[in-house]
Length: 538
Image 1 (cartoon, rainbow, N blue to C red):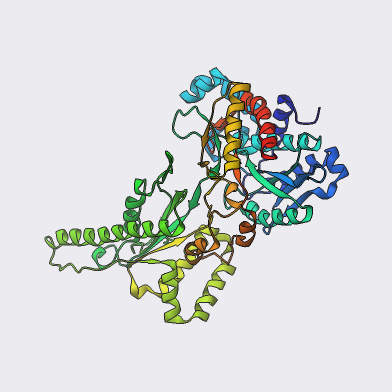
Image 2 (cartoon, rainbow, N blue to C red):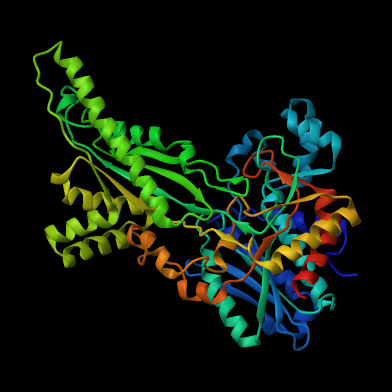
């Protein structure tokens, strides 16, 4: 019968996975990789083929797991990918101590049903739900994939199945990025031909109240642009003698936040508009000097737009913000001049890319000095984290070029997710048609095909949609590229695997009401996934 082939045994596995508090970057994330490896070791297949199950260390001391089940001399191989890290639980409030105890948390929520949000009440009255951090995103998908690997070990498929489960998907996707060369190595070592990569991220709603179940043939792309605002310092008693970076950042945010000009539409699917993820000045302590340096970061999603296209649109938007800063400053200064003898002086806010700022700094101080400064920052400010470290590097160059200010500098931060899609792949599209038909006929379930998974996923790193050269604008304008962040571009070009995502039903990822609909996820989907893999191994 197997370890994980019933709803009850899948529920048990899921709760054990959730009980590991695998918040990204914590020790339990390391421990969970070891637990998964240990559980798979117990399968008879891996007792007989121990070399095909491995725990791979990452460069920062975490691990990812691969498990390959081969069927004779077959080359055809489906990759199952998942992640086992989760976001933190600060949003759970007084229920925080139950966040990793699904049964206890679910019981507590049922006890207080009348106090729950209305949509939660409606769900609990209509189905079987399990609550807890990670039950939806994405430990249910991982449990299902471990079950599929067990099926493969019992000879269920005419081909090979390779499980890959990784840490760090919720932050930088370091696990998946470092797994890419391993996928190439495994293909060479065992003579594998990857026919498809199947992710089992959960279904995401496209709008509040969305009840559709989706199957995806790609994953959305993400850029994380930052805008470093370098103004002019002054005392608060003389505000018109300087320029406040907080005001500069505010105008940038005003122009970019929820700007529908950045929405991309592909066959009726729409990317969400940009939204701010961080905005702050860089004063380290209180004083009556205005903040003259600040930074604002945005989440920008895309599907088929190139990095250069998005960069050009960002620069256009920021130039509008820069012009507004100039005009507003003169307008306010003119009003002030009516109260005090004062002659307003116009100024110009320069808009630069990080590449242009770097070139200017090299022109002024020489390439060797700029490299020395950047190496020093990279070596001595590792505790800052990638976003703040990037900002520190831009700050240093901007300070060297301060005579060119005031200025706004566009730069890119990790992580970067390339958009990936198999919407033009006839093999994947035919498979999707068959899955949709099967789910309708066998389970009376309507699956709605979508080109792009909207929640970001590690599917982005199983091949490049375009050539390496199209990544150049990112590399040129990302301070950390080649320092502490890099993409395995050669390996990605070798892979180029067709992709799809079929996962469990849940709601409220990254919220304290995160929940999994158990019946669909561990009964209906548990039948549909093996059917899908058989089609992908044709």
